[in-house]
Length: 171
Ligand SMILES: [Zn+2]
Image (cartoon, rainbow, N blue to C red):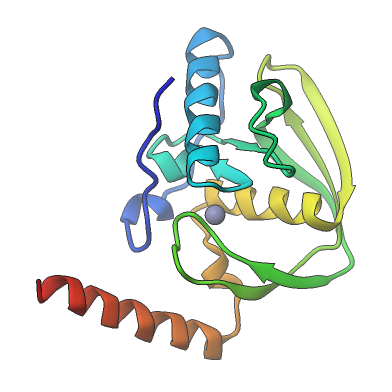
């Protein structure tokens, strides 16, 4: 197992659309193990393959931060069948370090996907679980949570990011 580098904004790879997972087996298991280690190391509660530079429709999450490999949830090729209601809550992202903002998401989602073995699964969830599925699935389509916040908040983020970038280039 190895900890991978998490790409951060404005890395252009974070804007790429991922392709479906078609091969399930040892290579995928190894990638999943690396992604789980990377997620816990940060620590975060979810991590998409695109965040570590792998263009696959795959993400892992662990809502309780159990750090238990047996409890890591693995989602491949998610498709949203139902998105209903609305809930606003604070969100952050390992690829957007040091910034959080309120984001409105569907309160309940039904997602069809494949598990790490390629078997079909259906999730019908609400709350934080639904939020994580939406946040991570966004990554697979090149979307970051800062794309879903108010223009005012996005302006604050961009100004702050520019200042940090300037500070770095001054070193
Ligand atoms: Zn994220």
